[in-house]
Image 1: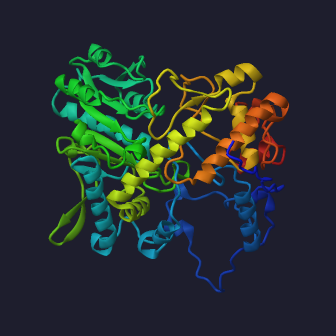
Image 2: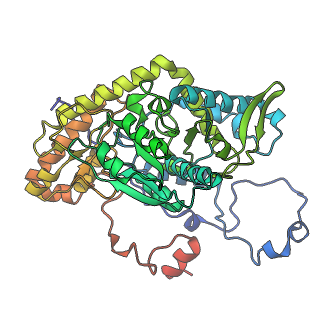
Image 3: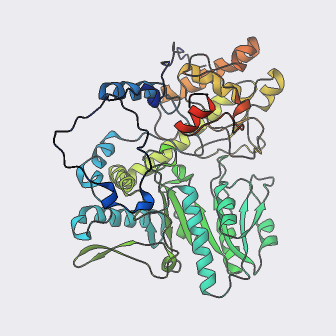
Amino acid sequence: MSGSKLRRYHAPVWDEPLIMEMTAPGRRGNVLPDPIEELDPSAALPAAVLRAAAPELPEVAEPDVLRHYLHLSQETMGMVGISLFGTCTMKYNPRVNEQLTARDGVAEIHPDQDDSSIQGLLEIVHRFDLMLRGLSGMDRFVFQPGGGAAAAYTHATVTRAYFADRGELGTRRDIITTSQAHPCNPATAAAAGFNVITLPLEDDGYPSVEALRSVLSERTAALMINNPDDMGIYNPHIKEWVDAVHEVGGLCFYDHANFNGVMGRLRAAELGFDACMFMLHKTFGVPKGGGGPAVGAYGCTDALAPYLPGPLVESTPDGFVRRENPGGVGRVREYLGNVNQVVKAYSWLLAMGGDGIKEAADLSVLANNYMERRLLALPGVTKSLARLTKHRLEMTRFSLEEYTAETGISAVNVQNRMTDFGIDAFWLSHEPWIVPEPFTPEAGETWSLEDIDYWIDVLAHVLEEGRTDPELVRTAPHQQVVGQLDGSTLDDPERWATTWRAYRRKNGLA
């Protein structure tokens, strides 16, 4: 252990009611001046959309609302402690960028405004497009996709349109990926109507070039892959893969979810890829937000640009304009997507600069290998594909298989107990697990050496607790806002409720 003093942590716990349960008839947060000209809904709206009865809304005073949501924020479990959340490159989101996008020039605009009234915003979108072209070698980016999976789906639809335009879609039905690619790649390919071929890992931690060639044919539409993968393994034969796919006429998509460890070190186009995507809500310091404000920036070569979703932002002698893309695949999200997140990513990348992102990548790799050295010294901890001794990149997937066999304590039990020390629950692995009892920490460049050491020291402490007092770990968390939940009713439609009306009915309150 590094000697960290484990903190006496206890999360705030409130017996907080639902906002609907706090209602008191006649109570208001805002009292408007009298008289107010009332709008007759029946004169302004079609009869079909008029309500038969007034909506049930909570009647609560402003201080009560403020206190209620403050309590809920204090009970938030996750992303408030030390969060070494792997495969997602969670990093600090600079407050200055939040302040920038809260300004009227971003927060108060309407996407249907005339282009002349949002020139600054359109210029940022265009400039950021150019910056990502520089990082990737691609010829055009769009920011509509609402996350990595949406960007992967965009590529699947672009692939479909590309081959349909050439009269080959009836033949090109196969998209190839690997068992260690992010699940969004095979899932979105299937959703777009393609057959999915998944290559298993081999002795070196990735499928061989020979295995890839064995499934290539005139039916091949695309390769969709991330590299390095979530075990931190980089496939050094990736250029051969791309060349082999191109030999049979297929396209290649680079899922850059794990770009953090190679920022400024490689460019997708120089490896021969036809398209790639970047996670703005991870790699570029933008909040993740549970999929709400996410952006999967999708970039492609000129050959695929005619199929991009519109609108596209163009620079003209008269200023910046949005134009539709008549031959494109159509919208994958509204308007320009989560454009306020593009502003944050643009600000982050400007602040970092080329030297900054290279340094961040180096720190990410250094921190990961420091963690690996310390974690593998803990009894019961092994790493994925332990026979491979070369250094990993920005993350390593570890396993508690030996520890679980010894103690009966699972990775989920350990995860729950670590939250009792102010550590956010670690990421396990994408499903299905190909590494037993996995956990995948990723320090990135955000966390200090003290934070990383504390995280590891907490894990060491919990592993020892599991040997001396297994029930304490098995029943955790104990210091959090919630304990373990009885999940037996989660699939019972007679018990769970997602609306206030259903909650009242199912709890006898109607």
